[in-house]
Length: 118
Image (cartoon, rainbow, N blue to C red; front, side):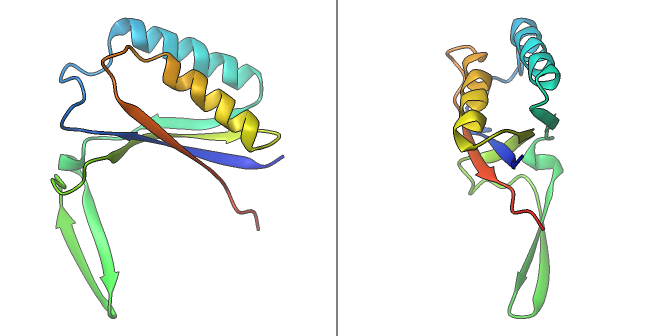
């Protein structure tokens, strides 16, 4: 069965300062448990803010590093979910359910991509 990576994109500048509400975390936990029991969810995690990250860039044979935050980025990867689904349509449906657990004041975009095997 193919695997899919759902990249969770957020706008750090407009994300709620207090982070996810306890109610959101409860709904998220319930959905992740359902996905795990269904055999769909392989791994998931949130990521620290870009202020705590470093970018490593390779160009023209040279490496460079830049410490965060990365102010030029409007959207950043805030987390991910690795899923195993029968097809892209099923992976997208699970991703839609993930987005719907958020309150209306959140702006979240997920990019779903199939993992190239072997």
